[in-house]
Amino acid sequence: MGLDICLESIMIVDPQVVVDREFITGVKPENIQPNSIDLSINEIFTIHGALTLYADKERELPYYKPIEPFINFRNKKMYKLEPGKRYQVEFNEKLNLPGNLCGLTLVRSSMAKSGCTGENGLFDSGYKGSCGMMVSVQEESFVEVGACIAQMLFFEADSSKLYEGFYQNMDSPFDWATEKKIQHYTTTPYIQTTSSAQNSTLQYIYIAELER
Image (cartoon, rainbow, N blue to C red; front, side):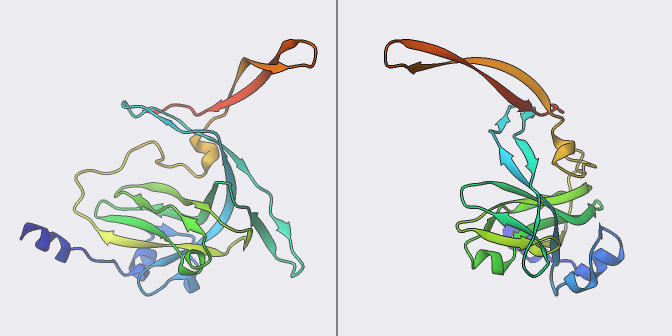
């Protein structure tokens, strides 16, 4: 019975109210939907390398490289997305969530129906900063700068505490990962026709500034 009471208390907050109270900024009026707010593309980054998470909540993040848009035949500023790559899409909209509100991002139906996937994200009560989504595609796809590819729903929340984690007050992946170029020399063997030799390769590993 307790679960039934909990489920009945879940309510999506009117997105117009969220905008009017400036819990989200940078929203165009036409992007306010009946139950959600459409999120528009600001920048897109490719994600390179691996993530490492530790039990004490330290982390080593991948390297994020911004990709350049191009002008297509309709004179539109476009991003090209390719299969097999991971993309971090950063949106124009910024969040300033109060203690009784949280947000959930979902990919828009046009993206989903085209085989494009976006990883859902929960933004906790008290979060302040940018919002984005990791996106991948199954076929070569093109999205315009400013196009809406995701939506955010807002829920009333009885919060145990306010968010004060790693991503608080950050604006982009450049804030997440201060690039530390650590030079590692690795020895990679290869076979020649007459003899075997070893080739020393210089690799750059980008490690995020760790923040507890």
